[in-house]
Amino acid sequence: MSAQVQLSSTHLFIAFSRDKLLHQFWPRLRHCVESLTDEQIWWRPNPSSNSIGNLVLHLNGNVRQWLVDSFNKNEDNRDRPAEFAAAGNLSRAALLEKLGATINEAALVLDRLTEADLVAPYEIQGYHVHGLDAVYQVVEHFGLHYGQIAYVTKMLTEQDLGFYRELTKTGRAS
Image (tube, helix red, strand yellow):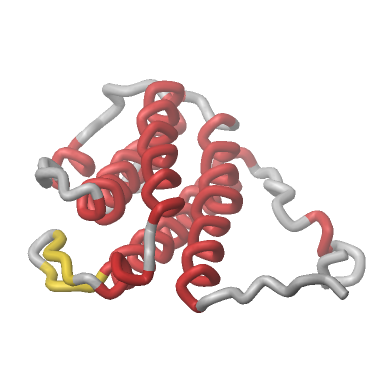
């Protein structure tokens, strides 16, 4: 008889959030950005829309503010308007390096979160939230913008990104 590990809802929530952010959204976003030129990264379909470069900077700011700085009790120095004002001043390699470093810091935070951290109150970006809200906001927000980046990448490359190849034959994961 094997010993069963009793999983708490805290452990399940953090493990699921970590998997989505670090092993699904981030690698796929990185693949998209790597498949484009610097010019494509900074292309805007119209003046009201953001470039992929802006979205990468925005995700970096969001993950740092909501996850890294809040749980590490660091001062919030985010300049959100600058994320959207940038216009081609960073290469795709520099963008990925910057976001990758933040993702690595976020992984360390997620690895140490406890139930007490998830129920603790925080003030982030002027909002009064709990730790669970902050983690959920980061994962959901990252997924939303990763989807935009994937869509623009498919539009620019006219290629399937192949993220769900295992579903092509049966419609189900093997």
